Length: 343
Image 1 (tube, helix red, strand yellow):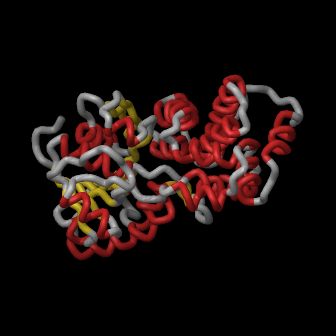
Image 2 (cartoon, one colour; image 1 turned 60 degrees about the horizontal axis):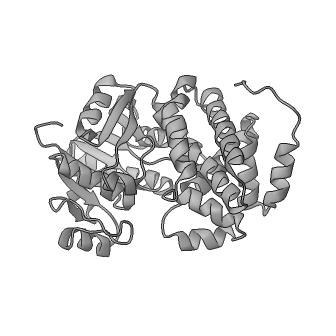
């Protein structure tokens, strides 16, 4: 743990943002949350809880929340983005306005896992484009098997910390690491983000299988073939390193998201497998289901670039074209024979 205090702005005070911000405060840093819900900010400041997202848990009382972005960013050496993918570009533009006025150049860290439909850009690419067009090295991504609920309970957790700058990756590694969270540096920024984003799509599929009462063999087959799809997309379109997907942000995150009730993507898929509509699931989840957004971008890439991702494409059709789950499973199992190992 670093001995000196670092001023950190955490943009987003949902479950993951709250837990990460509180942990960073526990690590001895000066943490300010930025969120647009006054009632949540008040609860954090006065009661040190965030019960809508994290029941029976308290934040570090030294963390402070505000709906004033300039106040949150003032003097920040590190800005942590923990926002839904759909909000990243909007907030990034506002951050840029503030930084242009102050002249400050904080390190940007993203803990958001997604791909933006339309542009098909990863979070680091959006932040680079909107805030640091000439300085991609000032972007760091953290990703891996790390449910907020488990980190809040101080479950032992290991995640990847990626940047094109080894120095900046190491700085974030030092800021976040403690007795129960261990970060490993990685120089494949793009690969780490692809793994973190697309595993949410596969997690929806995993939940659907459970909702349809399939057992362990089916789950294992899905995760393994899902990893093949993630790797194929990462390598062929984004230029990621194949070995990255064997790491924490690849297979590690895939395992935890496809097997845990703490995964909102898995829970969404389970309900869909049980016969509920996507609209019903999204309205009643209470939190963002990132895989439902990411699958749109994946579908666009598959169509444009001819990337073979049958599981992801099936999930897109089920979610947005009212395709029947059983018919999709039959179609997938009846596909022409293929070699197992191919990129």
